[in-house]
Length: 491
Image 1 (cartoon, rainbow, N blue to C red):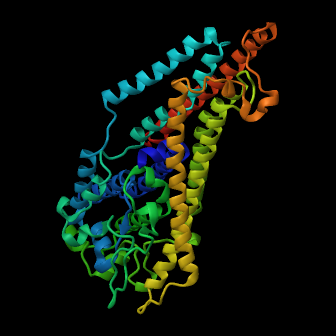
Image 2 (image 1 turned 90 degrees about the horizontal axis):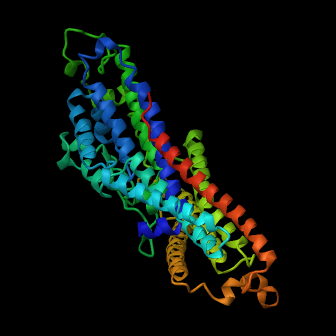
Image 3 (image 1 turned 90 degrees about the vertical axis):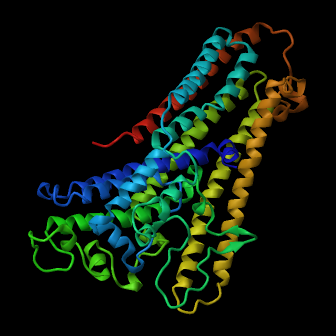
């Protein structure tokens, strides 16, 4: 399914990659402040803090392909951050994620280089004969797939796991060195984290027609990162704020239990306390009514999140139409000039790919709005039945998600079938060559014996072919450099 979604909507896979890269860079900047907020005189005595910060940053960077949740139940999260003995949990998660990380291997580099070289040789071989209509149509077809190399390389630059469930496995109790209680502080198991209450009624994700309302946000895999930009930020912001507050208290030499800082006591004594004291020490509130829940309200979302979403959308549109657009133009302007089988197929592909991405993005907002209502409903001691408005939201969220995926799947099969027919020569017929799709039978024509006018027009063909190929290569190169820069370590 992921492969068909990627082929059917390059804009979708590009948006997921771009938002992952932007999130990664944002969390690095945030954690750099927390890591550097510890005075040098604490480096030896409080050596547990920096490994915990590094482990948390690594987790949030590398585990974007799974749905993360924080739980404040019984001090799970606060003890995981404050207590020195729990640093092994963070370092254990970091070690597990490092072992299962997909690295940049020599075989992958060789494959990417061969793909780039093959495209370059195709361009070089075609241009001496660029007046040939056959070469023009071949270049338009090859340029349509130019997005694949920077996207494949971009995921390696940004960082993914070898399997979809490796990040979730690293958070499970059996794979961490923390206690069972600490290992449940951050999980990827449920849409709603556990919470203390006398009665827990229907904590399961609501469904409609057998499909989850939470949607792709709950699915593991990097292509579904497009649906996690709010929930991931909410978890990352919570954890980073807790570490920043803890670093601030250590900087001010504030013990967990209050009072004066006693340098004669060990670190475990200074940083021990009750659940309420641990929560206050890292900035969490012991008030059950004011705890951070699983889903943030739209008004709570930071403006920087929307800027990253907008930036990722711009990158997605540029790569989608920066490769599809030149292919459409080359096929359209190749005599007989007009919308024909090739240019029409490419236009349908580009529009359907964009429509699929936009529809799935709309489903994300609908799902989040529906889950916010479900979250509010479950906060009551005796949850009432779902309102009509909530039911409508849930069904619209499921319907738009199913529609968007079906568009992407059908679009993938469409472009694969179109490419196959093109290379089998099925488009080499009078109806297609005469651009009958747009010109009709009255104005459509096929050149059998080129006149001086057609020969002169070959120079024009050479010009727009060069421009289209150059633009595709430009988008290709800039996209590769962008994802490489976005994954580059900050200094």
